[in-house]
Length: 243
Ligand code: ZN
Image (tube, rainbow, N blue to C red; front, side):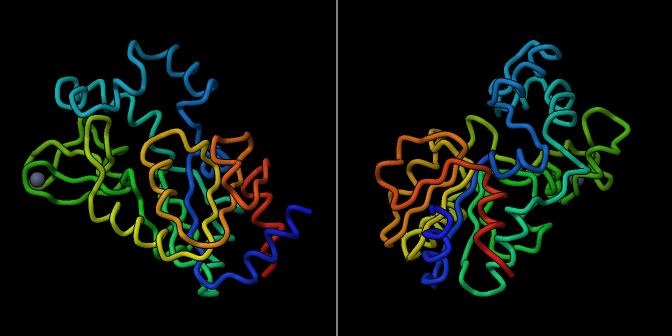
């Protein structure tokens, strides 16, 4: 019943934007460190909480400990796109979907073929030398012989192009996301409980006719949505979009 309605909404839309959170990646076996399971594992191995370790000041003051955590908990070299990523990439090909806005840093949307992706929190696949600005991929970080990866051109410390706690979001990406949402006729929000900044703020810019929320649990925005589906995002999207 819900799926039929979602099918109709997608069929009648010409400017869809998808906004996704951690739930999109957990279906590719990338743990959400905010979830109970994720936290349990981390507490066993590290003295600090992920929020502390993934902060700008921790990176600056304890770079080696930052990288010990980062390499084992944030880069998933073997992760592959799931049904949600694949369907969204195909939906972009049909020109119905105009943008994917994501809070995830795993690059799986691009791996699935999506082109217009706004990564609010950056990407583990981009890393730059803090001295000379050279860019490096995630393999370079993982294969680094030293715990702290160093630039092969100037020896400078490499920093992931990921937005850490205490750091600001990239204004250009934020503005592009707001623009995409504000002109969309349908906004599909998936795999996020909409409690983490800036997710909740962003959907306020939506002026279109269909707000669709797909999440395993309910969110505080359910009453504002035209359609709420409490199920797996990959399962829902692959069953409504037949290509
Ligand atoms: Zn350098």
